[in-house]
Length: 474
Ligand code: BYC
Image 1 (cartoon, helix red, strand yellow):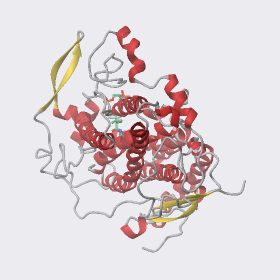
Image 2 (cartoon, protein in one colour; image 1 turned 135 degrees about the horizontal axis):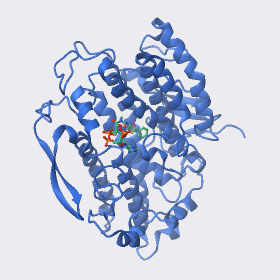
Image 3 (cartoon, protein in one colour; image 1 turned 90 degrees about the vertical axis):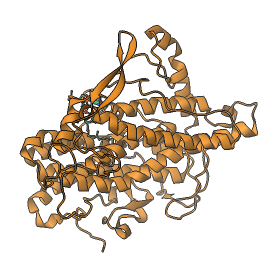
Image 4 (cartoon, helix red, strand yellow; image 1 turned 90 degrees about the horizontal axis):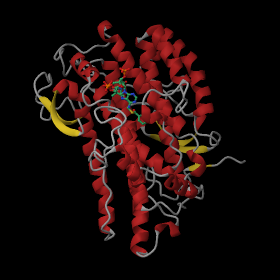
C-alpha cells in the first residue's frame, strides 16, 4: 500500500466522513500539545529510528526510518473487515456482530473504551523523564517506540469515541488529555497508571508486567461483538508485542548482567561493579506483578459477568473451540480461596462472574513462562539463585485479598508481622536509592550501562551499535 499523506493517516476512509474528520482534526492539536507537555522530555528534536504504522498490511505497518517524535504519523488503523462476523460468546452468541454501538450496551462500551484509552497516555506520562537516564541508545529508542505507539493507541480509542459516541465521546476524548498520572486532583483511572516509574528497572517491569495486562485486555476486547472495537484492538496487539519484548528482554538482560558478575566474582557484592543484586530485582518483580494483577479487577465481578453476557469482552483466545468448548459459560464455576475469619476457605464463583480471573490466569501463565526463561539464565551461569512470581494474594489493592497482609508465598500474617518483614518483599527506600544511583545516561552507540547486558541483536536487522538516536545539536 502506498504511503498516505493525509493530515491523519488512516485506513478507515476518513475523507468520506467529513464530520468525523473535522472532530478528529480538532482533537489533533490538543493531542500534540499534550504530547509536547507530557511526552518524552528533552528529545523532541532528535532523530529517532522508529517503526511507524502506515497501513495494516505486513509491508506497510512496520516501516522504519528516522523520525522526530512530534512528526510521528499517529493515525487510525483497523484490521480488515471480516465477512459475516458473528458474536462469538455470551447471551447473543451466533447473532450478527454490531457495526454500531447497540443502544442498550452504550454505557458499558463507553466505559471499557475510556478505561482502555486512559492507560495509553498515562504510561507516556509515567515514562516521560526516563530518556534522560537511558542505559544505551538501543534502549532509548525502544522507550520512544513504546511511547509513540501508546500515543497511537490513544488515537485508536479516541477514534471510536468520536465516531460512535457523539458529543459524549468527544468530551471523553478531551478528558483523556486532561487527566494526569499521579495527579491527586485528576488521576488516571486505574491504580498502576498512577504509580511512579522513575528508573529503568521499573520501566522494564512495567513493560513486562503492566503492558502484558494490556495484551490480555486487548485480546479480550479483540473478541468483542462490537466489531470496530475488535478491529481496532487487533491491530493494537501487533504493536503491543514489541512492548512486551522490551520488558521481558529488559528484565532478562538485567538478570544476565548480574548473573555474569556473580559467576565471575562469587565473593563480591555485584554493587561493587554497578550491577543490581537479584534480591532487588525480585522485589521489583513482586511490586509490579502484584500491581498489574489489580488491573484485572476483582476476582468475583458482576461487571465482568455483564461484559461477557453482553458479548462485549471475551476470554483470551475466546474464538478457539478447543480451548473454550463452552462459549456461553452459564454453567460451571471457579473455585478460589476466600479469606474468612483469618483463614482461607474455598468458594465457588459462577464462571461468568469469574471472567477477570480466567483472563488473569492466561496472563499469569505467560508471566510464569518469562520467569522460567530468566531462571534459565541463572541456571546456565551455574547459580543456585532463582526469581519467582509472588502469590496472587500478595500486595493486592483490588479484589478478595485487597489490603491484607499476605506474604509472597501466600501466607496470611498478622499486620505487625507483615510490617516487620515487608522490606524483604517490596522495594525499600535503599533499593530505590541504589537503583537510582545507577541511572546515568549512556548515549554512545554500542555502549551499555554497567547494570545491563547488551541485547542479542538490534532493531530491524541493525546491529546493537547502530546509531538508533541521532541527537540534535544542543
Ligand atoms: N484500579 O468489577 P470490578 C494497557 C474498579 S492496560 C482502580 O472488580 P471490573 C496498557 C472498577 O473500575 C489494559 N480501580 O472490576 C498497559 C470498578 O469501579 P466501580 C487497559 C479499579 O470492572 C501499559 C470497581 O473497581 N484496558 O492497555 O470487572 C501501557 C470494581 O471492579 C481497578 C482495560 O483495562 C484498578 N486496578 O474490571 C499502556 C480494559 N480494578 O464500578 C496501556 C477495559 C477495578 O465500582 N477495562 N477497579 O466504579 C476493563 O475491562 C475493566 O474496567 C477492568 C476492571 C478489567 C479494568
